[in-house]
Length: 435
Image 1: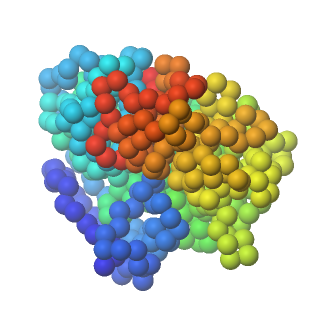
Image 2 (image 1 turned 90 degrees about the horizontal axis):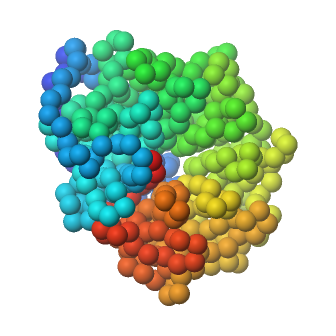
């Protein structure tokens, strides 16, 4: 009764495996089985579980000597250049095609990302981006395409490859409870945020930089990465770029030793606070909206749970829609900008007094719903939102959007909802990427 583990394949051949840790701290009771990742931490109990466990467990490092060789090729439809929509999450089928946790949609049908040793990822895919012409996928998986990659991998259109540091250590530490939650490209480098102590064998504490050939920490005057009250159990949930700075968001009290209330900025060499005023707030998502930083916050006020979306403009923070009119009754998990509107997806039914059902849009002055002829929003949580080919595409754990059947993924054309041609997926979608 606590954390339920399932074996998901093997670890492959490793030169050395080192485990460091201590006894597990008492955990919140939240059912028979708990799975912790960025998108599946759907309530504060689950986040408290994550914090308690990560304080006790530092993780596992896998070192692989030598390189991994590949041969063969995937189907031509899997090649990367533009026009594709990638969906990541925890599923086994996309449009009726076998696809494990990640799939590509070409506007007509779905395909798996298959290499010579297998396809997909053996656990959750929580984040994706493009870097140096390759798809980067990250999450809580150990293997991609049958190759040991440890939390993050690159796909070149035909094969999956690990990101191996100069020490020979691959990826980031995702066992037993680590994960990657967000990816961003900044100043030519790939930045990786989540909950992990090391990347490529380097101590990084929840955020790391990959320059295409090696891993690096983000140091500050008195530490590296993020901490929460001195503990490195301080997850980074999201990354974005605003005003030439990499903005890092999560649940932490300092970054590189610089005091910061769950939001900090990195300029390529130093950390700074952005003045987010609420102590103890969890910031699950951040976005650049018309040059301003927008953040989703979850916190406690007078023993009541509060969720809102705040904007930082000219150094000052305010709530979109004001207080209490801008408050939501659940978490915002992802943002995007679509046709000049700020789109928020998450697990909420109302913004202020407006019924929105897990998707809401901000037009610069008010919040509103995305309503179809037969309904409003979705009938389950929305964990990812992105523009694609003129549509707004949303993914999550829902079966209907605007009253229309839609298997965990749907699109909005500006006036109505519809399913994607080719069908949906059979379980959670946690990340979307349009190329």
